[in-house]
Length: 112
Length: 114
Image (cartoon, rainbow over all chains, first blue to last red; front, side, top):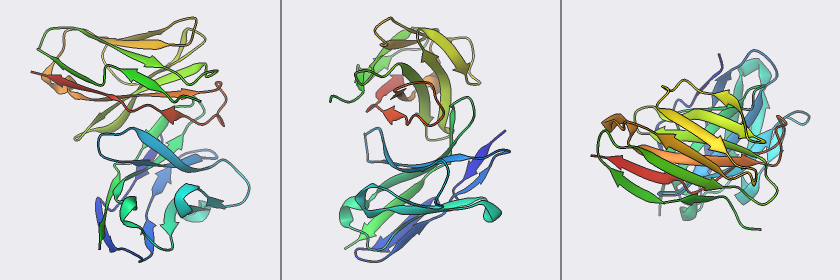
């Protein structure tokens, strides 16, 4: 069965600083990988996705993620964080049956 | 284009009651999935419907059921509510059933069981 691990439950960064959120997955075949963001009281918004091809994926709001098969990782990055980026971030892997398995989430706080 | 709509947004029920939640997909989307989000268990897949047929089901008891109508709208029902059913229930819809079809989530229904 597939699984997703987000090792950092909470991360605090200063506004303007760079950000990297870690995601490790376990999946037997070619993974389909996603990053979603959830603001308080809201649903999930898709930031970016990886299906195949270029391992560096660009998303919305200036986010990018890099798929590294050898490390089973799909880390999310942003070069300069804005206060509005404070939210909870979820990494997910999609299986052949289209079910998404999510990591536990990383809550991002942004210091002014 | 309007997004995924879930009704009601908030619901309070007591143990033993049953509840029905509704999800209206983005226009043209034919696949609807349901997820439960709790602080303890995180986000867990409940089931997926496509063209009125259940395609996948997560590891939840039979008290959790769903259906999809011909207009792709979906409902999920939870019978004999337990305190542990308190959660945010999220609906996600996709254009088709292909693995590359992206899921778009609604705002969720917050269910509180007293």
